[in-house]
Structure formats: C-alpha cells, structure tokens
Image 1 (cartoon, helix red, strand yellow):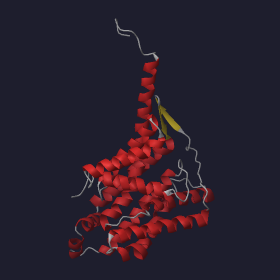
Image 2 (tube, one colour):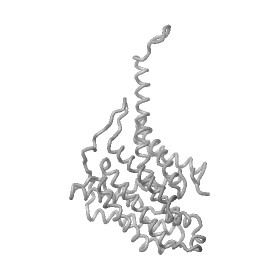
Image 3 (tube, one colour):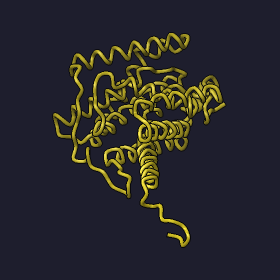
Image 4 (tube, rainbow, N blue to C red):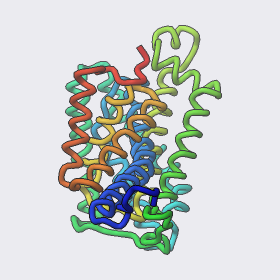
Length: 306
C-alpha cells in the first residue's frame, strides 16, 4: 500500500478486475493457439484459390477426412494423432491430385459460380460417404495429453492445443520456405501471378495445378490430425472449418500464406476472447462482424497481392 492511499487490492471490485484481466489473457493465449491451427486450415484453401482461382468449398471436408483418418489409425493401431500425420500426408496428396484431375480440371475454365456448385457437391459426397462408412455419431480420440494443461499464473494452456499450434507453425514455416525458396515453389507462385507467362517460359501448368491441389489437401489433412485430440469428429465437422477458412482468407488476402497466418490469429483471438469474457454463443457474431468490416474496408485483404 502506498502511504496516504487505501489498499484496494482485496476489495470485490479489484478481484473482479483481476478476474477479467485473467479471462482476457486466457482468451488471447487460447486464441493464438487456435489461430495458428486456423491458419494451417486456411493455408491450403488460400493456396488452391491463389494458384487456380478455384473456391474449394469441400476444403473443410478435407479437414474432416484428416480427423477420421487420425481417429481410425488411433483406434486400430494405437497411433497418436500427431504420428498419424506421416500416413495422412501421402494419402491426402494422392486424394487431392485425384480430385483435381476428375473434378477440378474439367471446370477450371468455367464461371466461378459453377466451380462453387461443383465443390459444394463434392462436400456433400464426402460427407455422405463418411456417414456410410462411420455412421453419423460423433467420435472422440482421447490421448494422454487431451485434458492436460500448463498453468502460468491464472492462465491455463491446453497441452493438446499447444502441441497443435506448435505443429501448425512448423508446417506453415515449411510451406512458406517451399513456396519462396525452391524452384518448384517459385513456379507455383509464377502460375498464380501470371499463368500465361509461366507457361510461355516452359512451366508445366498441369503439373503445378495438381501438385498445388494435393498440397492444399495435405494441409487440411494435417490440420485434421492436429485437432483430433481436443475436437469432436463428426461428418459435418468440415462446414465450420471451411467457413472460418473463408473468413481468414478474406481478412488476410487471397493466395497469401502470411495473410492466412495473420487472418488466423485475428479470428482465433477475436473468437476466444469473446468466448472468455462474454459468451461462446456470440463468438461467431464477432467473427462474421470482422468479415463484414473487412469487406467494407479492404475487400482484397490485408496481404493482398495486388
């Protein structure tokens, strides 16, 4: 206590203020962790959009497929969700490339509304196939760290989310290095920026497109593995994922990996802080309010290429 001033630290008002500060800090920390995971989901979505100018509404169901693959590997073989990433990556790359050749390539020259309808159809096909295989009930995969937490003062960090955020950051860093430090990554960016010029200098557009789609699907599959320890998996789990990815891409900018990271953190923090200090019921209100503000202020996104 400072001489001449009363000690208010133990008063109800002071305790409420301290609790509110702790709630905000908890929301920020959780938001950063979830924001990095959201950024990973959005990275595949924005890469496909940036390279091929295709809005893939089935991208969220690619995440859901990753969740079910991690679940199946965990139940059948006891594989940890993070270890299952090694299996999920090649499976999702092959699946993504196959989807490109069978579904995406024939519609690339079509109007964007036609592409949206086709990918929405793919969303429902995947959803119903999953229901046919696994049923419609929700599933969880418990791990030794599912409920574990690290206490830092009044803030508790979920170990599962912390591991997921760390893995997401590593994968995003690897994707960034691939796109900006390798010859094939430069070819991908060239096709995204000037496809006709890229083809003119001998870049195989077809190869770039199916590889990019496969990598985008793999990013979604990895995200599905990462969230499995703390999320409920069901056939409709992909819809919230693609909605958040869409908002993040609009906030961050089409085709930008740094934009996906920025947008993911903005949405993750906004969602978590709202849930912590107000109510989870209003989290989506805040998220889509951010979307509306961005569309009014800068529709091309913060990290737009143009």
